[in-house]
Image 1 (cartoon, rainbow, N blue to C red):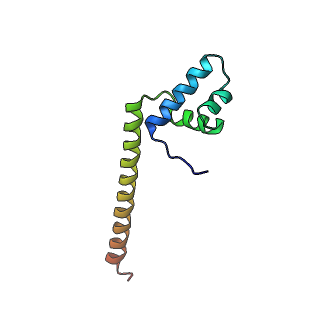
Image 2: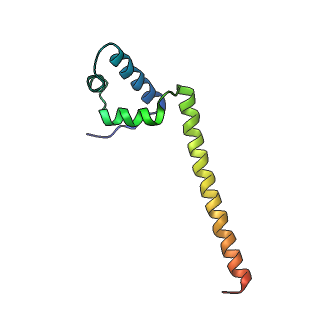
Image 3: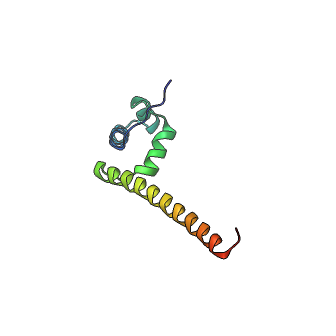
Length: 92
């Protein structure tokens, strides 16, 4: 069975549906089965997206991408700086 990649909006809507079903008296496990997700996935989603609205989740993902880009930029600049220091000291 192929693995599905869900968007943040889809994840939040599935989490809401599971929470609604559990508030109606179903167990979390039964609600997860009804929404076709595993219990472990639900708890992982709840840890990452718990309490977020759809627009907040979108912004969160955008900020993660921007953070990754900036980390790569800092790593490249640090490497360039180290190379220039080594060349300036005459260790070549």
